[in-house]
Length: 159
Image 1 (tube, rainbow, N blue to C red):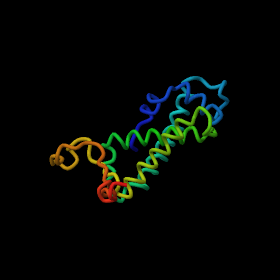
Image 2 (cartoon, helix red, strand yellow; image 1 turned 180 degrees about the vertical axis):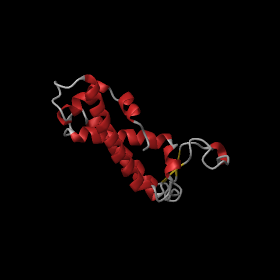
Image 3 (cartoon, rainbow, N blue to C red; image 1 turned 90 degrees about the vertical axis):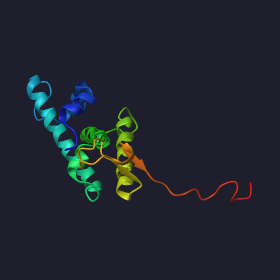
């Protein structure tokens, strides 16, 4: 898994998660004590993280190892975004309403993963402990490639 339950709770308010998941708790929302409610919410979040991690693996395991991906901050961020979207989807995400921000973050995460899978974007390690070798040029994060410029004012005759 590329993020933790605590990171999800930290990045989103617990009250928001309680409200979003209130219909999905096993017991009646009003009848259970706080500890039981928190445990059930954490179990739902853990399931959403597993789903998000599996989705990321589907895109990236051909190119990268799990140990490499676990150390990458971008993958951690996108795992949290996908997991939060999955949590909101459980309760019927309204893509036109307040949850639209989570939907957009989910779409951006999927677009990023598709570009990494295509080879348009390369992920580099966030630290050089993965290979034990210094990273060339000390680049950390994401590397984007594109095609050469095809048209310019000079090649089109100043049009």
